[in-house]
Image (cartoon, rainbow, N blue to C red; front, top):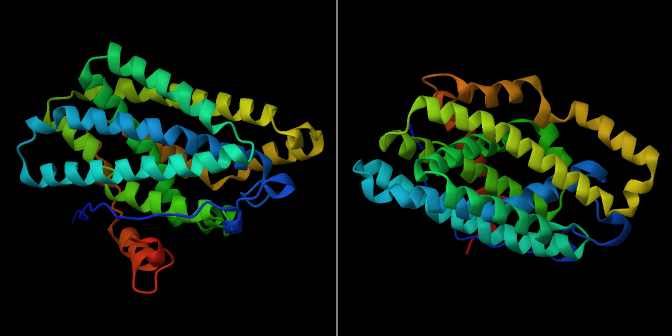
Length: 283
């Protein structure tokens, strides 16, 4: 059973009172130096990424004839547009805190603009499908693993990422289904994922290192080494997560092979129920 894809009208507060401070307390991921920069880098990459995803799917929207998929495409676009808006606001706050989110945003825009101009549009859609698989795998790890949730403490970043995670999980199959509906091949899909695995991981790593280079706290060798060493135990880098991402390369794969119905029901109630954690953020 598929979950209805419905954009939520939501707003977040990114002021200092919500756990996003400057100065010594600015490492908002439980004080972890490297993970604070990793999360800031990912947030900085989201707005241009979401815009690219919307363009790629919208380009083929007129060729979709299945009524359910047409409805899912509309929901996908509505959710992604809201994700881009909220992460832009968050990125402005992170920039004020000393994270180079605006620079990352510009560089991602340049790279994705090159993809859009030079690649066949079906390849842009394949890129979107591949990156949607990455975001869904990371999103559902956040929703499943208590260690991942604990990393984010109580700051507003936690609220934003939980909301983002549930919506990424809701629409994880849309770009894939559009790609398949318009004749995208398995060969192109799998080879695109292999390229994006290199490109995405390289981009996140380089942007994170550049971000760390501008942080005075990273000049403390002991703290920096300890923070990098902790990555070995990150809930986002487990064998299970890596295998889930690699599953995309299997011929015949579909995102809904991993049934998330119960997970979405649980978190929808916890976040958006009558007494939900984020019910007050809904407009």
